[in-house]
Image (cartoon, rainbow, N blue to C red; front, top):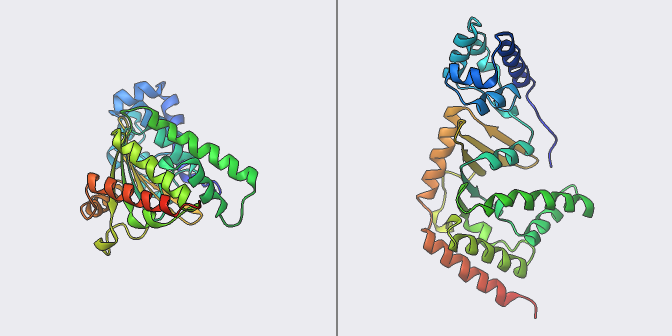
Length: 275
């Protein structure tokens, strides 16, 4: 895991909002009603985890009579340091009502089996101890508990064909991993699409991405790279990320075709299994 990165400017912004709200004698719930924002969103802003939209900042200034403080300082909040590297993403997963994932090179964490995840952790560099890998494994499997609810969050998964073809952990592990994904799709817990090699260049070539929507807060986009992750809530960045996802989805195989591919590849892996 990468180190923690919390934006000092967002923390200061949130502290200022909390102090101004308390000076006005308002609870978060009361401020949410006056500013026409959700209480949860205000709580995230005060904690330094989220950034208000420009309209939200203007309403906060109006309700708290701050002379435009929150609107003026809004551009100083750096989207690249929105929150802790991944701990915050895992928290948002628990709150999301809709999640759309694109796996460029690996099965997304929410769908990983224990054996697949362990193979991924063992490949980390610098190498991790067995104890560290066990800790990562517990956290990853706990995240998948959100799939126990048959309805929420709604989960769409777009996989590059490379994810299906790369034998992470070996043939036996990969066969079980693909069967697990198929089982989730067959009981309509996830919607699955595979982006085939034949699609060539596409709009998500550069990285994996996770899109999340919420009942009471603006959507976000999370992009991950080597030893780093960026959580975006800037409306234009989020919209661009959503558009890139949907454009790539247009080049993908249908849900049924994707399931057929995973079944066929799983069978191939099973035939490769050492006897």
